[in-house]
Length: 240
Image (cartoon, rainbow, N blue to C red; front, side, top):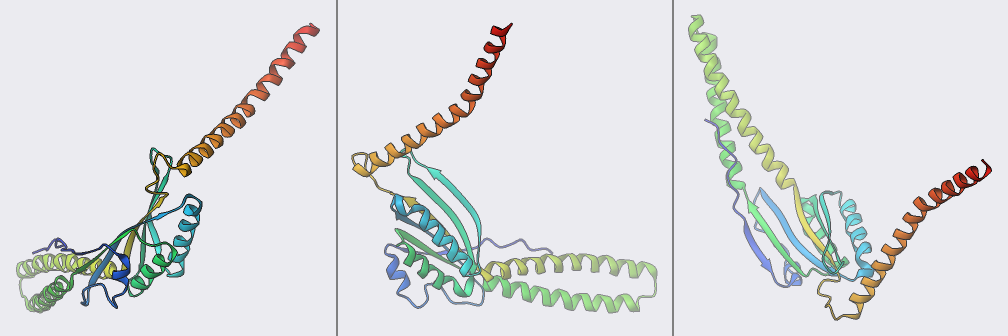
């Protein structure tokens, strides 16, 4: 009988103040198989937005991690928000969170620990039983005298092997999940800037100037060759 991947149960610890979280020696529940995840956000100035992204991504490389997802968006004020999901070796995860905190203070951070140890132990128990049953059937198959008996045992072995493969796949999934822990971080540019803030209007003005310059340059690239072509054509007609 095959077994589906059990629905995980997440014990969520909400941290109103991230410094409280990092003052603990261990923020996560203890067990042999713990899947650790974190969700956080940080607010930075416009001038430090790109630099913060670069520092965080460099930190991921320094911890031998990887970035599995990124997303850049802009709100109605023209302020950017960068969302990235980072996967870090589990044994270094809490040190990684502390160093991210050193780059830019978390506005909020939620730490999740999903203890799947009981599921892995259950898989090990099922695998042991199935392997014992498999060995017994293989002995019966060797001792079977008739072809029909051998085929019947072979059919049972096929189903047992399928169940073993499913369980081994589930165990591999859990082992891979606990070997890396993930942080999904949102880096927000100038979050909370008011419509009446001087910085807001300066940023908007700079964005408009950049757009106007871009439009003029693009228009010139297209218009100048066309103008030269028209002048050349008129000159050619005038000679005729």
